[in-house]
Length: 198
Image (tube, rainbow, N blue to C red; front, side, top):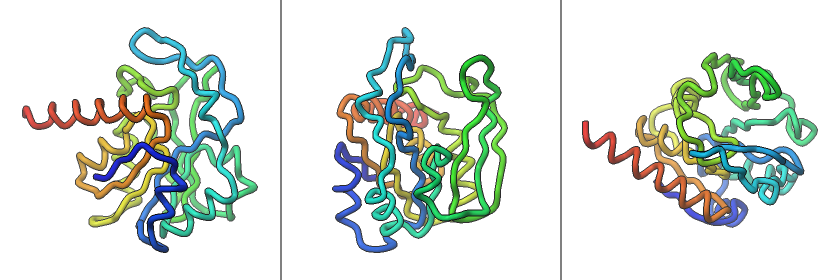
C-alpha cells in the first residue's frame, strides 16, 4: 500500500499509461459545501476549501493512468464524462435533508445496487463524505479481480485503504489535506492493529 500526502495530479504524473487496473475515486463535486458536521462531537469540518470539482485535466490524467474507473458523484459533472451503461446506486436509507442515495459512474461491469444503511457501519466520522469500508469491499468484490492495482486520488477517511487491506489489493492513494491524511493514516493503523489481535 502506497499512500501519500500530495496533489493527485503530481501522483498521477509519475505513472505510465494504464498502470492501474481500476481507479475508484470520490472527488469533491460541488464548488461549496457548507454546514457539514461529523466526528466524535459532530464538530464542523472546513470542507469548502477542499471542494474543487473534477476538471477536464484531472479526468484526462485519471483516464490515462487507469484502465477502468468508478467515480462517485458523477451526476454533478456528467458533461465531462463519456456515456456509460453502468452505474452503482448506493441506497443509504437516509431521511430528512440528506440524500437517500449516491451514484457512481463505472467504465466496466453492469449496473448494481448496494442496499445498506449509511450509519450502520460508519462509526465515528473523520471526514464529511466518509463512506463505510464495507461499501468499498463490495465494489472490489464486484468490479475488481485478483491482482488488480487500485488507485484512489482522494483518500479522504481511508475507507478504501481498509477495504484493500482486508481483501489484499495493491492500493496507491493520495490525500491533499494534511489533517485528513493524518487522521486517515491513524484510522488505517488502528484497523490493522485490531485485525492482528484476532
